[in-house]
Image (cartoon, rainbow, N blue to C red; front, side):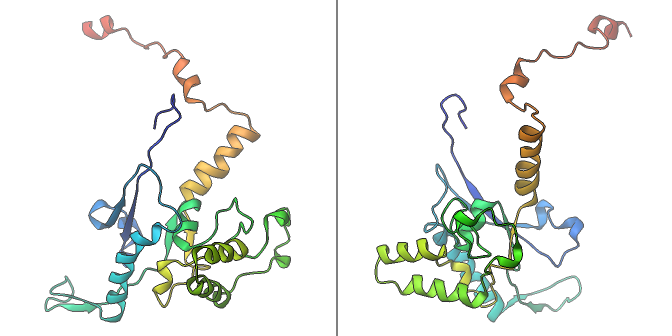
Length: 227
């Protein structure tokens, strides 16, 4: 990222971890499967992201329906057939909307869980929020797929805030229950950063930190050489 010129390059990746493993070793490098790298210089659009998802979904359809035969495992020296499924999607909020096929939080239909519009964003009573159901969600995505033109699809997307995602080809996929916002992005870089920078007024400007003089050494180099 070029801070002076205001330019940045964005690349991404998709990776999988096996939830059957103990949580303490989920994210060891040897246990992470890198499924693909999304090249820059810009992030893929809502429509482009499906091209990256399609090969992955194809593999998991086969892995669930036919299964995968492992020639040998620790507990089964003669081999065993296993079946695999994608159980949860974890990413930051913008990526979760793109991968899940939902509109951005900046659009009219800002929520992927309820049907509130942006003009009602100050409504804090959950009992009045019209929730999306899995059936409603699939109905809207089918309308989007059946639309005769790109303009018609755009109108449906604007109206409902939902479009097709390749993940919906997985028969068990439920975007209302299986999409989770990454805790680092949501808490550390979101709520906590806002609290420290805006509410408490703490300056975290990188330029300010660079202007600060380094702390003097507690022991001089000459003393260290004599020691």
